[in-house]
Image (cartoon, rainbow, N blue to C red; front, side):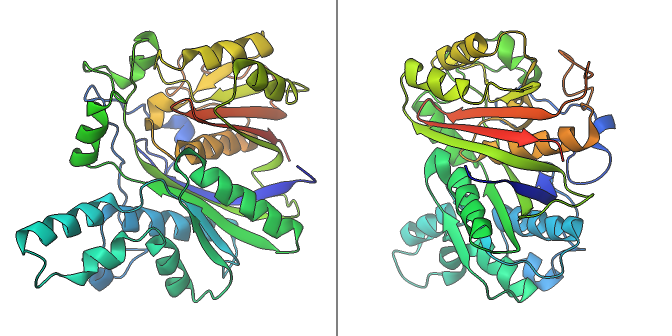
Amino acid sequence: MKGKCYIQGTAAISPQPTFEGDIFQAPLVHTDSNLLACIEPDYKPFIPGNSLRRMTRTLKMGLTAALKCIQDSGISTPGPIITGTGKGSLQDTEKFIKEIVEYKETALNPTPFIQSTYNSVNGLIALQQKCTAYNNTFVHRGFSFENALLDSIMMIQEGASHTLTGAFEEITKEHFYIKSRIGCWKSAPVNSQEVYQHLSPGTIAGEGAAFFTLTGAATPESYAAISGFRMLYKPSEEKLATALRNFSEGADLIICGRNGDSNHEHYYDVLDACFPGVPQLPFKHLCGEYDTAGAFGLWLGAQILKAQQLPASWFPMQDQLTAPVHSILFYNHFFGEQHVMLQLERV
């Protein structure tokens, strides 16, 4: 990665109280249902009531997180809008498919079909903000958010003053059931705060929306700098180790996507071997597993770097930093296939 880009504003809607208030004093929200659902904010200050009634959870969460991020950055109108999602609006997709069967392909309501498209959130953001700049949505499973981030970085390197970059995902009962049938989730109920102690096949499901305003120049309000970026598809342990060692210089803290799934724990054994003695913070007990969980991990890293402290109740395994953190390595993968490494630096 050539040069750096800077996180100027951010916002997240997640299963934790991340949207409003002081996250460093926030309690840990946990569940024993193997599914972490988002704590949804009051949408009325962000979305008109007549529009709100027609929108599903994904659209509301994505649009509201984006608008909050724009507010946080102090930018009046966003430039390029670039997002990633693995599944888009599942609720609309399922509703439309059910109505096809129920009404035998006649008298269908077009709204669920229109809102089920992956770029619906981007379109809503652009319409509300009157933004006519570049607008793109990536749908690449575990690389969805990361490809959106890569596209944003390239846009900034080519001269864009800023980009609005984010990800959004939802989980429905039907989707949870389907993925449980193929072994994605743990077979027995596990308390989410103890997921790392229950090393067995499968993990816990999650959802969320996170957005970032990225710029090419730092300001006193910047959260963090992104200085390194690498993606790998189904790497061998040797290739993963080589890639991780390229990030080994100066990493004071590691944020990792460890999730209690024994099928893929060997990748984190490689991480442990490459960074002996460096503190690690796993984050999947906070948000669960989903295609774009990496966006939540990046949001968390940016918050820690700017505030130089940890949300104590979220990380009882290490409730405070023993030294200033100048550099964070973020490592995550999606069910062993898409692997991502990010280097974050203090501004």
